[in-house]
Length: 140
Image 1 (cartoon, one colour):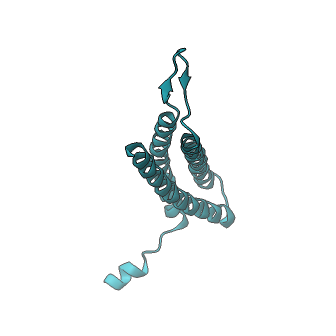
Image 2 (tube, rainbow, N blue to C red):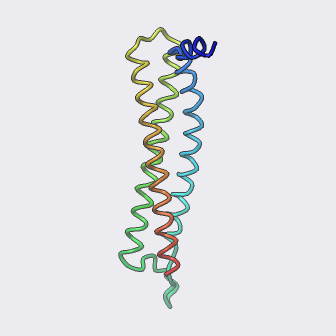
């Protein structure tokens, strides 16, 4: 009985595309969370350090703040690009389901989703690393 269930367990292409179409919006939402963290980190990096006697605010306390702000900006741009990749995956899945598309579109959709998963994992690691280094530099 178990052998029969396992032998028939391979998903059809339609099942895979429907699963991708359901998972991509969830991953896009996760990317938006990372995007919010990047915006918050960028705002923290750009906050005024001190105010001069004339009332002007000095934004940069040296090269460290510039490097931090540019790192958060890079994370922001990367997250926006991954969000666009997620939207492309959703659109490709919808196109495959609605119009008679061939094996090439299916394969591209599978590889696009795999790239999306890899990119989100790398983005999460980068955000955690940058968040940790930002907190460590503020504590010092």
